[in-house]
Length: 235
Image (cartoon, rainbow, N blue to C red; front, side):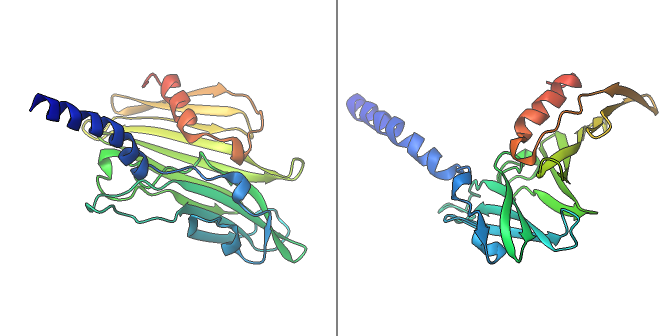
């Protein structure tokens, strides 16, 4: 009997990593995203599909461009009915010279479909994307008792031909006490405003930050959140 138990445990140790890996998402391979295409759908490589397509002028030339929110093309639930983890990616497509060209691919910006934490439970976590006056806006949240909300803003930079991070907002809300700590950073002006509650008042603190340009492709949402948590004393 002991030998059978040991053997069963050994087999479980061998197959468990494979089972876990099967449920985990796989980040997009940027090199597989086509450089050009005749339609937005062409920019979704094999194994991926367009979850949402947003149209708008992104570089000020008066022509419609596209922001594509991609998601892994696999079942939303497993055989047991549990939500699977599907990675997301953001692809920026510009229309120039009568053709569509890839301008940027972000593989660490959007949260996965199962990264919402206890707040979303078995539901898929959102990664909201919009175009506001030519600026790409990404808004997403996750957590349990403490809910983390982040907003990123990117604008096309004519000098570098890249989409640059111009704004980052971070907020941590304790849903039990209703206490909120937040910061709002404007990288174009180099100013960060930190807000903390003190009694019935909000106390704002202004500080200066580097204006160094960071492209959409280089933004790591996980690291951005960790850094904000440290600055706010939450980590």
